[in-house]
Length: 265
Ligand SMILES: [Fe+2]
Image (tube, rainbow, N blue to C red):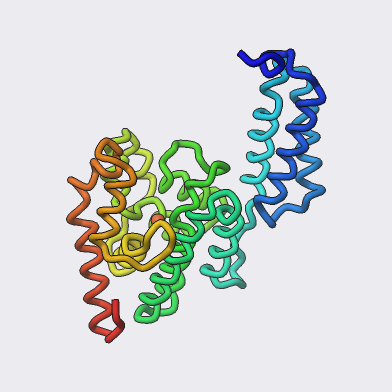
């Protein structure tokens, strides 16, 4: 064990330093909450845990408490704004700093979704593009409750008053149902209805023809990348035996939709 880093022997000055660094990181990670407010939250959480017997845990407890505050103040969508614009701002605030690669992927998925949206009605297109921006926000640590990104993201959105349909599209994207079954989360996922149709197909298509870095790739290459990156034991990979055909069908139907409108896939 490293002397000075264990139990209550961690010096107060070191805890102070860790908390200052934590505060700076929390301010940098997002642009929704002013720095002074973050500071107040940090101080309030610190006061709560000031009598903790093991000082080592104080920064962790403070971080957890402040992240809960962030979750509680996520801006609600107002009817005056295009849903997709709100979704882009929200996703950027949640992903861009903490998970830049995931943010690059998300931007690519939204671009693909915009292409499909052009052949849908404006309302359907708005729902599709908003869902594309939001589909992976559940990977952010602030939202991670179950460790199941589709459901963590969908629940976060539902808690913040986002249209139920968008929450449900996020919950079920990319074959979530089969993965949830393997993870024992089927009943929780069933909180959200799994719609069928071109918007759902297009969200899956956009996600599964975009690389982790946001580049356009074929469905086959994306699935090969997914298998290679996650490995055969990963539930997402194991679930391909159940949802692989469904994923492929969603991509095929969207490509057919695009070709009927003479849009290159
Ligand atoms: Fe994705």
